[in-house]
Structure formats: C-alpha cells, structure tokens
Length: 129
Image 1 (cartoon, rainbow, N blue to C red):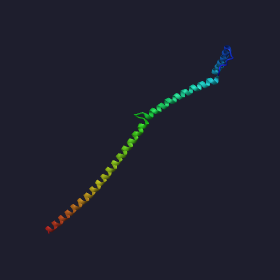
Image 2 (image 1 turned 45 degrees about the vertical axis):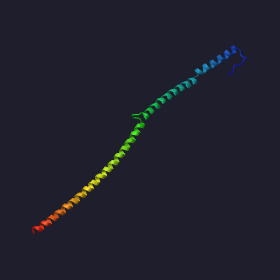
Image 3 (image 1 turned 120 degrees about the vertical axis):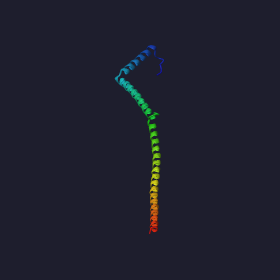
Image 4 (image 1 turned 180 degrees about the horizontal axis):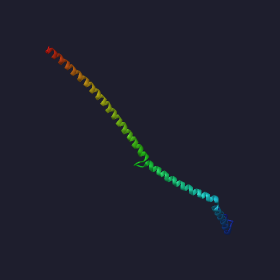
C-alpha cells in the first residue's frame, strides 16, 4: 500500500480510522472468534501430541526398561537358550552313549563270568569224577 501524495493528513487519518474500525469489527466477528478458538485448540492439541511423543520416545529408548533394551534382552536370552539347548543335547547324547557302553560292558562281563563259571564247573566235574 503506497501513500498517495495528493491526500492531506486529515484524509489519511480518516482512512486509517476506517481501517482500524473495520479491523475491530472483524476481530469482534464470531467467525474470527471461532477461528481464534480453533487455533488455540490446535496449539493445545499440538502440545499434547508433543508430550505424548516425548513419552513414547522415553518408553522406547529408556536405557533400563525401554522397548529397544527389552528386545535386546530377549535376543540375548534366545541366544543363551540356544546355547543351553545345544549343551543339553550334547550332554544327553553323551549320557545315552554312556548307558549303551554300560549295557554292553555288563553283557560282556556277564558273558565272561558265565564262561569262567562254566569252565570252572567243567574242570571241577573232571577232577571229581
């Protein structure tokens, strides 16, 4: 808006007065008030969203019980369980092998004892006949 040079100061003041009057009527206009209330509500909602995002961020990135830490703990636990499972299966296999060896040892030992007993009985039978 340029200031015309052909207007005198009184006309300029009157024009400014009418502009301010129209501005005042626009401010008092219910639509303007509604827009202002809507803007205030929008700002409040935006602040609430910031707070909620801040809380979510805290929950996600908390170094003690955040979601990221919990998933890391879960992964570590899974790895530990896998290691334990491998050790368990290895121990179970070794135990089964040991049981098989024991069973075979008992069979061989009983066979040797039976053979020795049969030989001794045969020899005693030959001696005392």
